[in-house]
Length: 206
Image (tube, rainbow, N blue to C red):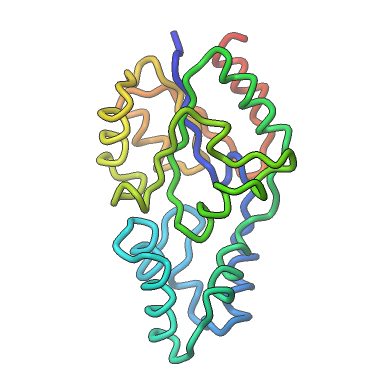
């Protein structure tokens, strides 16, 4: 019996635009952005930001040094927000309904540029921050590790007390759901921008 649901953020709740992020970073002068920016797991400075080795200011400085050009915080934020193609309110409304019957968690490879915005009223059409939709949020940069590393799942399990066999894990990253399955979670692997509500209802026998 499913008692808990763990959602990914980008690609499941937020519609992602990898090409948009590439375009925005190139606009500000990061010419080799394709070598560092991946739809699911980052490389170099971008990975160090998402696994918490760098904070936002250290990332800005590091990217400036890498490119030989001084970037402002606004420019770097603009780059990251190229990823955000949309946030369907219907998904958030559905999640709100699920909270009546399930414990809901977020497990996301994310960074302070995106997540600080998500914690504000600008996150949703209804003016609610992301914290209003989940019982607890596990952000990679705060946990010091990114998916699909088993350690991030193990830390979430230990902190929450959830039992994987009683938990559904929803993620658009194939390596992430493969790891979740290895650890005993029920899994749902939707595609970016997909309306996954019916598939999730089927798994929950709703």
